[in-house]
Structure formats: structure tokens, C-alpha cells
Amino acid sequence: MVTAERERQIRENLGLVHTVANRFRGRGIEYDDLYQSGCVGLIKAVDRFDPTLGYAFSTYAVPVIIGEIKRLFRDGGTVKVSRVLKEKALHAARLREDFLRREGREPTIGELAELLSCDPAEAAEIVGVMQPTVSINSAGEDGDTTLDIPVDDSEQLFDRLTVLQAMDGLEKSEQMLVELRYYKGLTQCKTAEILGLSQVQVSRKEKAVLQKMRRVMDG
Image (tube, rainbow, N blue to C red; front, top):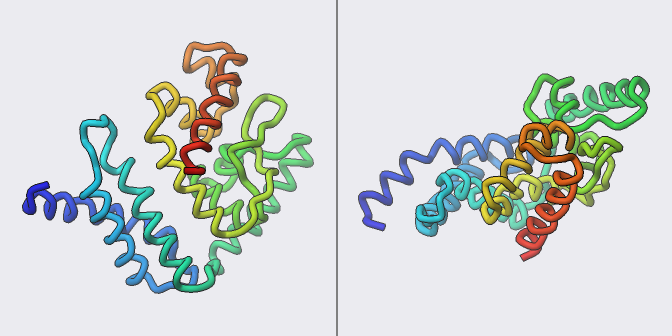
């Protein structure tokens, strides 16, 4: 890439670094260090990005930035959880218990996000603190994602964010399915309605897509 164009792209996407670095505040590493590592990731993303693949630069760059910040945590010590996030986790735990008593099942990430008045990504982060759970593997009776698969440690909380990287190799229809099911928290039935498929077709396609994503994430 021509130097001037490279510098322009780096400068115009520094906001991505701020956005990602802010998600890791309060975990034992100074923000300036988070930002610096994120910038290293941004530069790598700019140098490696192939625009002919047809997806947005941010889709490629965010997982690379996250990867560099994760490296900082691996090299720099223990991850700490902020007091605010702990308080949100306690509140979420109470809401979850109320929902379980009322509905007789675990809430989906989408439902918990609605109860917390936040987006599904933040709800997933809160659940990671609330208890060692959250996985794209589990499903309730209606095919919806639930919160009851154990996750080993905080490192895997970060790994959930890198699912974006695995999505890069998916077809458009597969990306849409993942977005509807795991970012918007829709049931398989509702997803089938939007995609013009049957619930059985969505279930089969979802299983195949998750297997494809896991192969990518496992390297």
C-alpha cells in the first residue's frame, strides 16, 4: 500500500482502536497501554487487509485489534474486572433468577440484553463476569441460545469477541444467520421467517455454520 494511503487509513480508523480499548478498561492494564497495543493491531490490519474479498475493513480490523490487546494481557499479567462490571453482573444474576422462576428456562442473551437495557455484546460480557458461562453451542427447546454452557476463564471471554474473525469466511446468508441468532438473539423460528426458510432448515444450516466457524477458530 502506498505510504500516504496507508497513513490515511490508519488515521481514519483510530476510532476503532478507542472503541475496542474501552471494552478492556478496568482489567488491570492502563488505557494508554491498551490503546498502544490496539494501534499495533490496526497497523497490521491495514497492511494485511484485502479489499477484493468484499467485506468492510472494520470487520477484518476489529478481531486483529482485539488479538493484539489479548496478547498484552497474556504478556502483562492478570485480568481484573471493574467494580461497575461486577455490579452489573450482580444485577444481571438477579434478573436471570427472576426470569428462570417466571419462564421456567434460562433467558437468551437477547432477552437478558433487553432486561438490562444494553446490546447483546455487552450482555455477553456481563454474563462472563456473572458466572463462567456463555457459549454459541447451547440451545433451548425453541432453538434459542441460552446461557448455561461453562466457560473456563476470562481468556475465553475475550475469545468470544474474536468470533467476528471466524465470520469472515462465511457466505452472506451464513453471516446473516449468525447475526440474527447470536447478535440479535432471535429464535430459530423467527430467524426462519426472516430468511424464508423452515425451522428445520435453519437448525441444520446453523449447525453446519457453527462447525465451519469452530474449524476457523481452532486454526
